[in-house]
Image 1 (cartoon, one colour):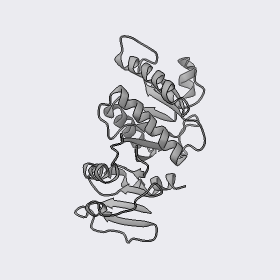
Image 2 (cartoon, rainbow, N blue to C red):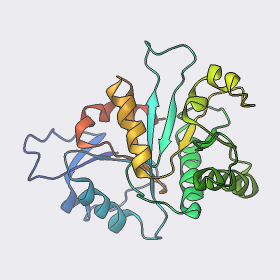
Image 3 (tube, rainbow, N blue to C red):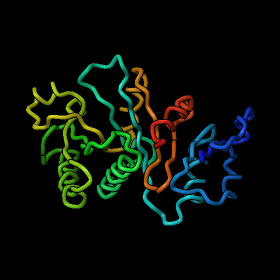
Length: 242
């Protein structure tokens, strides 16, 4: 079942329910039993705070660490060297600690494994490092370097890990010029904080890329786009329906 959660004070023209879709006010969603791993919960016209509060109270009894992934699908007009990728976290965790960013990376890897959004490939995770190398004078570079080693130590079986600049994440030409020893594009970009992540997301949206938001960290598949791009919800659902 696909549960479309909305706020009845904001959405008055509610579509009809059918065998696969149920539209429900967020206050009434608390009363629904049996929501499981095979279901999808979709944020429709509702404030993000209200939606997240409902998720935390209704669907997170074990107090899991929750984060947000924004999946960008490569448009046909994009340069050939570009590919689809995820940015995390650009919507939920404002100033994550190093431990939080490890959990953010793991949530993204679990999401990829569960949805097969990149197919069967082994995901490459990049922690953004604006220096492009280890630099003891740059706290961001030090943090990214530590995060790579921690992820390689704790979850090497889930993916590959590295740290470099944004252009090197998405361009082989940039990697060649900067002599980065990586021969494929990044699948999962882990931002340093919400401001950096949100800026990247908005930049690609404004340049015509299709982007879909997902809440990660729970067994459920949860679509969480901003109110500015709710028109992409059906495409977002289609990407994770297997």
